[in-house]
Image (cartoon, rainbow, N blue to C red):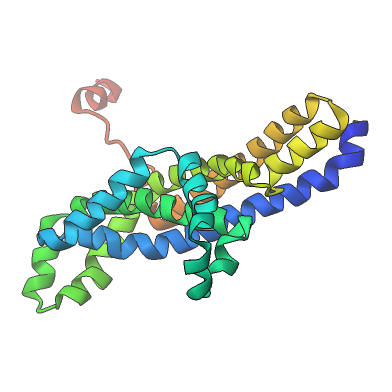
Length: 242
């Protein structure tokens, strides 16, 4: 307990940075994922193929390699980035990690949302067409709301995976939860600090799971209604008196 008393605030500070990094990545990634999912579902190959290549790359390569490409690879183009006034972004480890996580989670969210779009009943889409809705209105009022309801449970898994995967940000000198844990271990050589960090990750994950389940019940209440089972005729007959 002495370890937690001395370094507890550092762990909490790291946990806050982890939540901040993951939350911003999920938010901006969702903004990118929506148009990508629509393009990926389009019958127009010139729209679908570039998005498919993007998704395949970010889903098929380790996020650690992606982070190294952004953080270390950008240094090779320093003069070009300075000319574009973008070096301030790529020289900061926080922004490099944030950009990597945004690009990564956007690919996963786009694919999950594409599955939701494909899961929308065709009858609803045809009804919207018959009602005279334009393509924009169909997506805004019919397809996307239903697609998000379908994809919502899977998106919850992506939230948790990104939160845990964000621990790799510590390798680029960010003092998130794992970064603070490594720094404390370097000072104390007390391996139990990793156990406390794991427990803190567990608590955060459990809170997110409970929040997501609550939101699921609000978004899809019909899935959680108690179904009243009508007794079978034979069972009803046995209950009758003769």
